Length: 158
Ligand code: RB5
Image 1 (tube, rainbow, N blue to C red):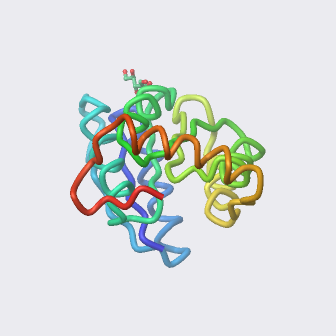
Image 2 (tube, rainbow, N blue to C red):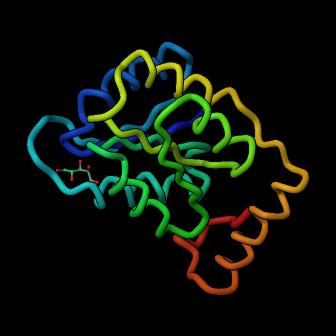
């Protein structure tokens, strides 16, 4: 699976740990930084990962910041992104089953390494349930199609 990842300075260490896990699981990982603990601005990274996912360049994205809030708020501005801020395994699982989330946002200051690893595994393995949830997600996509600009020419809004 092609996975695009990124963090700000607060999420840097968690990103590095999860990158190692993704590579161990055979993921094809694109890392949009940051590459140190030096302070940076989360929107730059969230938009880069969001564009990868919305354009189809990556199947999924994972973003890390202190709370996960800045990353989720920003990534959801990119048409086609369904970014879910999750704090435990259940929300990670439901964000896939019910919302077909294509970006997972993780709060590096609030979730420990062991839990984060199991959240990521669960999120990657869990399929979208479709059915009534497809109708609901379809309404989000329809709104994007009629009210927002595509993120880039190659974006297929599904
Ligand atoms: C950075 O200080 C912090 O604001 C950021 O990591 C994140 O928590 C924002 O939502």
